[in-house]
Image (tube, rainbow, N blue to C red; front, top):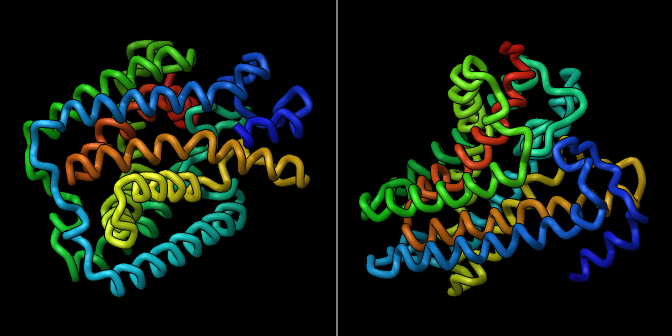
Length: 312
C-alpha cells in the first residue's frame, strides 16, 4: 500500500516504461494490477495447501546443513548471484545488446525493439552457465539431488499440483495478456512454442530453479525456522534477480525508484508462490513446470520469440 502511494506520487499520472502489453491500460489499472496479481497468488497458495494436505510434506530444513554452514553458503550464494548480475549488466552492453537480467528484454510485457537472435542466444547461455551450471556443479559435489529439491518424493501428487496450478495460471495469463500464443497462426505456434520453451527453460527457468529454489530456499528455512519467512525471502530474492528489466529506466532518480518498485510489484508474488510450491512438495521441478516454463513464458512470450526469429 505504501509503495503504491509512492508510485502515485512519483508517476504523476503515467508510467515511463516501455511495456506495450499494458501501455493502453489506464494508469490506475496499471498501478492496481500488482495488487490484483497478489490476490491470485494467495488463491494459488490456498489451492496448493489443499492439494498437498494429504501427503507427507518433506522436511526441507533437514536437507540443509547445520546453521553455521548454511549461513556461510547463503551469504556466498547471494554474493555470487549479485556478481553474476553485475556481469550481465556489463556483458550485454559490451556486446552491443541491452543488459542481461533474469529475463530477456520484452519478456511478458513486450518491447518496442524486440531482441535479436544473437542477443537471445547469448542471454540464455550467460544465465544458464552463471546461474545454473556453476552453482549446481559446486553444490552437487556436496549434496544429493534430493537435498537440492531436485528429486520427487511423491510423483503422483507432484504431477497433480503441476497440472492444477498450470491450468489456473494459464487461464489468468491468457485473460490478462491479449498478445499471447493464441494470436499466432498455426505455423508460428507450432514452431514458436517449442523454441520459446527451450530458450526460456535454459535462460531463466533452470537458473531460477537451481539458484533460488534448489540451493537458497532450504537454507532460508534452516536459518529462520519459519516457513513464512522462507517464503518471503524466496519472493524477495526472486525479485532481486530482476533488478534490471528490459523496461527499467535509470535515467533519473524518479524513474529509478519507479523501476525498482515495479520490479518488486511484478516479481515478489511469483517468487512467493514458487517458494510455497517447493516447500509443500520438496520438489523444485513443480514450480518450474507448473508456474514458470509454460505459464507465463510459452503462453505469453512465444509472440516475442516469433518476432525475434522472424517466424512467418
